Amino acid sequence: MTSTKAAKGISQPMDRLLFYCRPGFEADLAAEIVSHAEALDWRGEAEFTRLGGHVGLRVDDDRPVNQLHRALPLERLVFARQNLVALPPLTLSRENRLAAVVEQVVSSGWSFDSIWHETPDTNDGKALSGLIKALTRPLESSLKKKGALRRKAAGRRLHLLWSDGDRVQMGMSFPGNRSELPGGIRRLRFPHGAPSRSTLKLEEAWHEFVPREEWDDRLAEGMQAADLGAAPGGWTWQLVQRGMHVFAIDNGPMDKGLMATGMVEHLREDGFAWKPPCRLDWLVCDIVDQPSRVASMVQRWLERRWCREAVFNLKLPMKRRWEEVERCLSGLENALGGAGVRARIRCRHLYHDREEVTVHVRLLD
Image 1 (tube, rainbow, N blue to C red):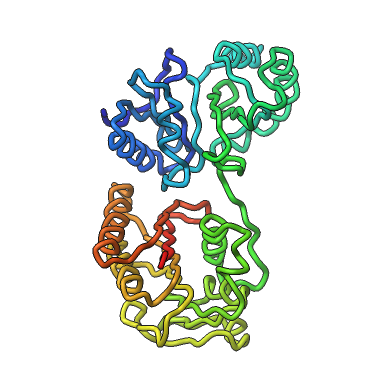
Image 2 (cartoon, rainbow, N blue to C red):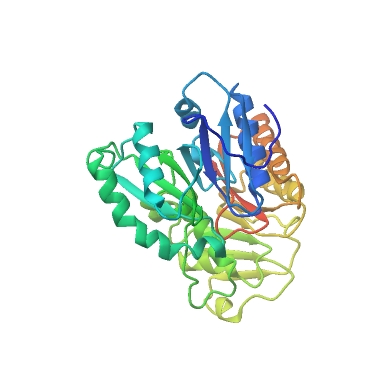
């Protein structure tokens, strides 16, 4: 598989996948999907524009691209927000934007039961909302008349990714291998009373990694948790809101209101050295340190079964971020396997993350 390069106009249809990501992380997502495709023995080339907020994978293979799409489930990808089978990007005439869109959809043979218009998560993207609103109903009407937009299309959804007023790329998503959130973004409201905005990272992690119907069992009142690097208490606040008793480990000060709940024991100790007095239900950690050091610390907790589940962040370098994530995750997986610890490991670059990724580990025995 070749290295990444800037996107160019491509004439061959039905030979590519399209992934959304946070603007600025295109190279990291490209490195990730190229790595996975190579491991699956697929040939292709990643294409992106820096700060474009999306990456294409043009496949050079005789097999249907849908096969690769199924082999790359979104939940296994770290930097991807959405995962689509895509058509080539279109440059539209501003006099009649819809004609080329309808023509490409009809010629593809696609059918679907809903249409989503999306933009990259940038200020330029947000500025296209008025245009998108004006085009939505006329496009739906045209595609209904052509038989492409119809009921009972097995839940398939057409996505139009608008990067400019005359630039759009269409992709198809399928139930079970897509985000059900517009743009793949989970937007959460900052809760009143939380000590810091970092609280949203843990809340989003729970939405991402713990099925909502399991919250009452796995995030239950009366559980015990540790928050390493807790101050001022953004993540501890989330644990307390679920009724958990928390060991907050940090040399810095904790929020006074949080301490007044009586649910928090603040220990001014080194989070890397502290040991829990008993087995806990949860370990959470948002320490700013080298990702390999944080991963090694959590590995020790899991090998010794000091907790049942863990959520922790890995602060990433400015370059070769995918390589660092892969190194940490594979090291953790291999170490736990070698120690006879069965666990499920997942990692995502969440919307409320910035220069970090969030990892969740659940012990299975």
